[in-house]
Amino acid sequence: MEQRIATIHRATKETDVAVTVNLDGSGNYDVSTGIGFLDHMLEQLSRHSLIDLTVKTVGDLHIDGHHTTEDTAIAIGEAVAKALGTRRGITRYGDALIPMDETLTRVALDISGRPYLVWRTAFSQPKLGTLDTEMFKEFFAAFAGGAGITLHIETLYGVNNHHIAESCFKGLARALRAAVAIDPRKSDAIPSTKGSLGGV
Image (cartoon, rainbow, N blue to C red; front, side):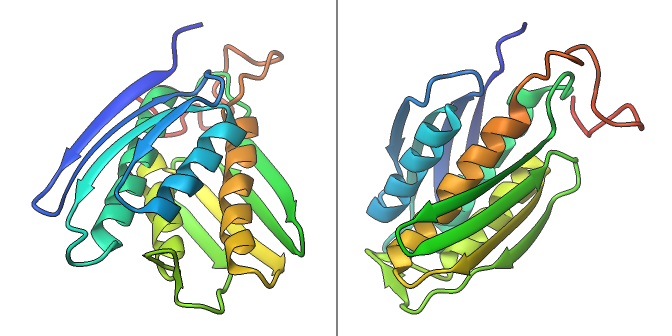
């Protein structure tokens, strides 16, 4: 099987982002965005998806974390899409139900080539660390757009804001791990009756 590794470099006047992913890795990560809580979440994403992830982002944090968070998510999504190539042989669908103490979050996704986010999660405080909690929705929307996936995230219940955010990222990780896996029964086929999932 070809190595499913990709690098994306995305530079604007607001951010400079370099991302490398290995879909068939072991969950190794080297992450630096300048936002501590975002780094922590990306480390969870890598560890629980088993996708090796390197992220180096330099952004306009003197303004706020919006551009850094969104552009990092776009680049990670684009790297995943590039590493998937034609999507031949992938399982395509993945889902996860993630408990974290008092919190339970459900994540489901389809590597469809049709980016879409359904977001049913809320926070009771405006920030986690230095990161505005409203940015979590923006992160997942940007990731779904960059990766070309349909992504549904719903927190069924929860109180602790840290747990809610972390369960969303861990849910994405586990669902993505299942969806990018090669199906041994159909490793030569694109899992669509159309014969294409928007890959290269």
